Length: 171
Image (cartoon, rainbow, N blue to C red; front, side):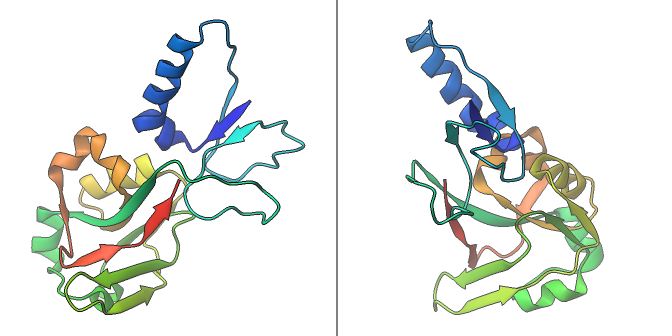
C-alpha cells in the first residue's frame, strides 16, 4: 500500500507510479490518497510520500525530491487589494491557507532576511488544488508547492513577492 497527498499524485507522482507499473506489470498497487498523515502501521502502509519532515521520528525517511513554496495571487486580486513588497503586508490581505502549510516562512533572495508569518485565513482548506482554484478565482493569496504549477489555473497566477522565496520542503 502506498499513500500520498491527493494533489501530489494528480500532478507529478501519478505519472511516476504509472511509469513504474509499466516497468513492473505484475505488481499490484493499492493507493491511499490522503492530505493527512495516516497511521502507517494500522493502515498497513508500505510507502508514504509526504512533503516536509516526518511526523514521527521513528519513521525511516528518504528525500526523493524537494519543492519550494510560492506565494500566489491573480493580477486582478492584487490590483483590487494592493500589491506586496514585504511579507509583513500579508496581514492586510485575504489569505487562503492550505493545511498543513499554516506557518509561512520566507527568505529574501538578495539580503537573506528571514520572515515567518502565521496567517489568519480568510479561507482554510485541506486540499492544495482547491486552494489553487480559489486563488485563481480572485479569492485571495495562497502559499503552495511548486508542483502545483502544472495546473491550468497557474496561467492566471502571479508570484506575489518575487524577491522572497518560500520555504523549500523535502519530499
